[in-house]
Amino acid sequence: MKIFAISGSLRAGSTNTALLQAMAALAPAGVEVSLYGGLADLPHFNPDLDPESIPAVIDFRARLAAADAVLISSPEYAHGVAGVMKNALDWVVATGEFVDKPVALINASPRAHHAQEALTETLVVMTARMVPEASIAVPLLGRKLAEGGMLADAEIAGALSGAIAAFVRVIETGAGS
Picture 1 (cartoon, rainbow, N blue to C red):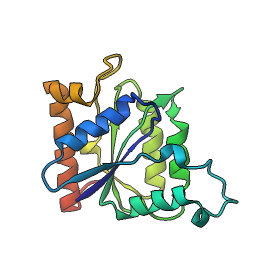
Picture 2: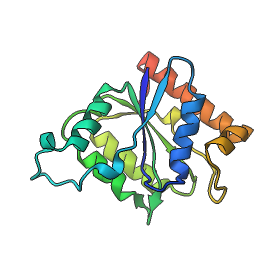
Picture 3: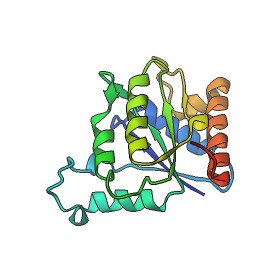
Picture 4: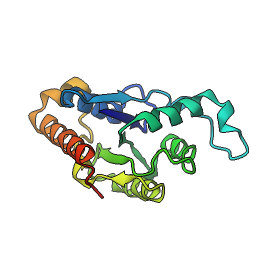
């Protein structure tokens, strides 16, 4: 099983990226969680550009298409989705990579619900199959934990492990929203 993970943050020490790395480490045997590192390489979305001539867009679309499911962790900026995350989604809004694809959203702060709601709305419009039982908010605000710290914290590791297990069950059974 292949899960494509996208962090909506470009920061080197991103909590969102660390969350996805921790989830990858906690994934059950036989589940590959692949973290996308090309978000900064995607050009600004422009419908006048030919996406078939842009290697970063071709690669992003191919990785999405090859995945069994998508896991997203994105920060909230001024009550909205990070611009780079929205830009990435704009490149695939009309091409079908998210059609009926299971998607879970992981949030690094329970207070940052506006971006989660906006991401959910965008993904639902793209006909993604949202998996609420695997979409969690992890209270990390101000804790500055890297992947190792998250794995060492029993509460955080337990929440992430439960979320990835729920996500895998839904992907295997085809259940979910």
